[in-house]
Image 1 (cartoon, rainbow, N blue to C red):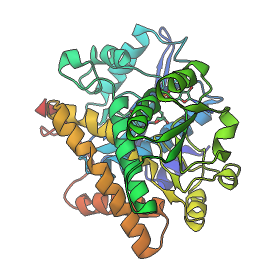
Image 2: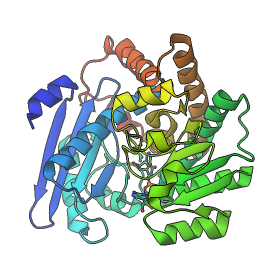
Image 3: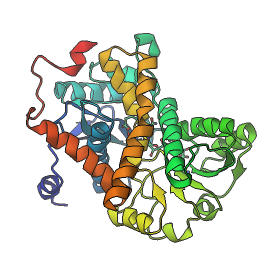
Length: 364
Ligand SMILES: NC(=O)C1=CN([C@@H]2O[C@H](COP(=O)(O)OP(=O)(O)OC[C@H]3O[C@@H](n4cnc5c(N)ncnc54)[C@H](O)[C@@H]3O)[C@@H](O)[C@H]2O)C=CC1
Ligand SMILES: CC(C)CC(=O)C(=O)O
């Protein structure tokens, strides 16, 4: 992979490789764009098939955060970390402390939080070494686990998508097929169940499936069956790239709306959804609840204020749908346009982010 060529093509600012032999830390911090402010994005711990896969994941996720933070109206840029390893077996305190020191060395250009494979406890360990971490324990006056708030945002966004598709935003009686019932989606299922939606769920973790079956009356299907079930809404809430050449022909849903990052395998898959008349809620717009919540910590965390802001996801999606309809463009293009316009509009008045005494984090 020609790294600088890739970074130049997609306008990345910085890629940092962090290695600590004693603890086994192998982390890649990708900073995409800091026009709007310091790069905020979570840390994913995952077993990658190759180092190149890990680098590509970090880069793609970081770019997604630039767009997510811009579209959510946050004064934050986009970044992300991946730690190579199995979160069930390879974690240790020294690893997250070493990682915290690497974050500190960036002097505020990058602020981290949870993502798949990392927890509030990990963020607390990172916090032993740096202030540039969010999603730390409520005991520190912080916001804790972002997943339930992400779920609330996805639920609100799903209602916006229903309004667009059906003219009413009630989800009562609608059937939602949920792929992956982990931290975000289990809470999402609770919101949907309470509103009277029917749930079909799948997960590679049988216990996660069982929980949703027992508590929310969900019907369970095998992981490869979820794409073809009869439903109104397909909610991808596991990992990315599940909207692809194999899955699109199987979909019966009129809406795709879920929590996963990078849902479209390639952008052309967003074009195909548009051509088929499927309402696609762009991933980074609908799943911004978590980052909105952790970003509120930078102002001294206030849960009520954060939840109010998360509710704007509904309006942000309605704007995206309106742009898509007006210009007859796929919703993912409309969302990109909305985010890019905000970044470009502010580019004139900001230069690349540097710690200059007006650091956003100095407010807490
Ligand atoms: N946690 C958060 O606040 C946010 C999460 N996201 C994204 O939402 C997605 C879910 O996040 P979490 O719930 O935190 O992760 P999680 O790890 O708690 O849940 C993911 C679930 O998907 C399951 N899974 C993995 N591969 C699968 C497959 N092939 N088929 C079926 N199930 C599969 C896992 O067993 C797990 O239960 C991720 O893509 C994440 O990046 C995005 C924004 C914020
Ligand atoms: C989990 C969030 C706190 C931030 C993030 O990395 C995301 O939204 O993907």
